[in-house]
Image (cartoon, rainbow, N blue to C red):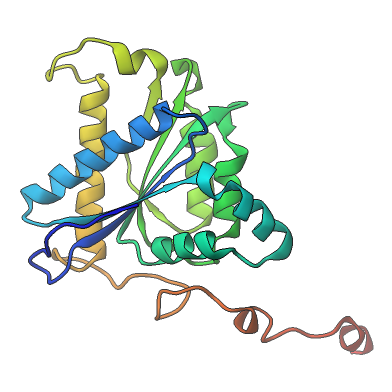
Length: 233
């Protein structure tokens, strides 16, 4: 699940979490996620930094995501995944396109993570679909969702249609999938270095709490006022 690398100059490898919401094996969504991961690795390596990668397959967490939606208590694997996300220095999120938007499983996974878990975290967005006609789904569906979650989404996104994976291109082709994923990987690496305080101009990470962990039920309901008291005021 995790791929450790050597510690970087800052004293530890940067944590990169990859969420892939593909449902088939093999999956074009996972293929795109892997390309973005590789591009980010290479961009960080050029700066002399290593990365610890954790890949989360949404389909492997599907049952626990549904249970947590109903019970509000994550199972063991989902809780571990949420912990990984809360410690991320960068996030790659890739979904298949269903009905002109993200998949229900992709959305459900981010619905159950704790509020503030990815606030301020650099995020690279990607999506896959049968045709490039769906490419705007990233900008009108994914980007607003991650803006609401207060993530720091990198400017460039990648949509990969079926023909992108089989097309023959050169390194000079600005529209090739390799060129586009390379551009996003470079942007995400730059954002991650600033977020982790490795490069100048970095600001303190914005999280739900200083511990960058999950918010507890006691925190969430600490200011709860019974309805009867509200009506009596």
